[in-house]
Length: 472
Image (cartoon, rainbow, N blue to C red; front, side):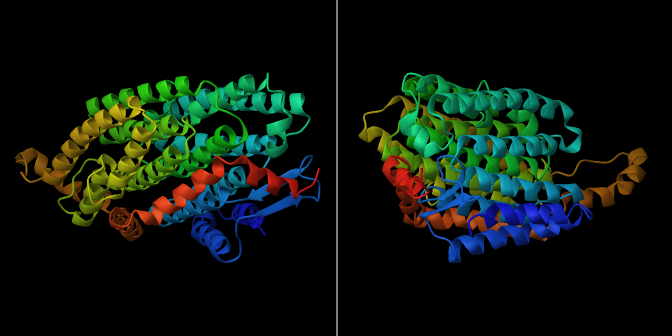
């Protein structure tokens, strides 16, 4: 049954090839189908041996207490994207393949297939990144992504050479301990690139700020969440993270550089891009500490950051920097998301920061809390500035010269069309903004789930027991 999460999106992707416009209509139904299957027909504790090969030698798909909530979140984001984004004909097919790939990378229990799915994601990401003639940004991503993919392949090959298996569960206790740090460095470089930790995340601002309603959502939300899962699986569940203090320091530097970068930007798109780098770097810094309370808070932080940036990037894609004078609903959603990113009380972001700071203080960690608080102050500075500018833009109508009046009227229809926000995007962004408020009043809705994920991802035994059901 769990194979349907991969097979159904692929089947509909192939079915849409003869008629490309079908892909954008298939996508929401496929995402909804996946969610229905997850909620009503699947539960954690399942393993599927593809081709009936034993798990140690064949392909195993694993649904446990860690992968299950991540699958729900990822497919929920895909559904929201399908309902809110303006998809060109070919993008529907590409996003169906992306759906299969992100589900596959979460479900797979072996290193080679995680590499295969990672490469599928990368290829689609390069195409999506080139939206609106953003060839330079896509090329930068191609270079960085190529390096990351090569490092991951080297890590997977090293696992096989030293353990004789690619299965994650078996490799964890068979691989020669002396070679594990080297293997983990290969994997780590990949994640530093894909999770946008500076300086290896320098490709992100050019890609995310291209004005598309698809690119920052597909890459910054859907793909990022799936890669945080894989990072957690490898470095919290399978192997020990090499030099966790160094990784934490690098991530903290990335947070400050990204926030300073966002502060100096004159473009809203690039400011949001740097803010995304800061958010994911915070999650990486927290997860590198390998402590359950901190990991739980990191996943809560990820939830808030992804939902908030989904709203901000979607509205930026349609409105740019034209303001909220004629789009009050969009302005409310934008402001709610901004306040949640900052960590204002009554929003999910407040609890995300509270739980993270509390957990860090409990283990006598003070450097990361200081960085988080400094970053929050900087975030407040530029996000409040952008909100004020967008809310009050257009209050004073500039005088039009007589010679310019005709051309102004000719462009009037184009301006109206540019300011138009599809009904689906308005509904989705408003509902997500209200979700941030609801979680702000009832944080236990998310915190209980993230605590369960953290406890399970840091306990290798349940995962190994489930893998052993597949046989040797």
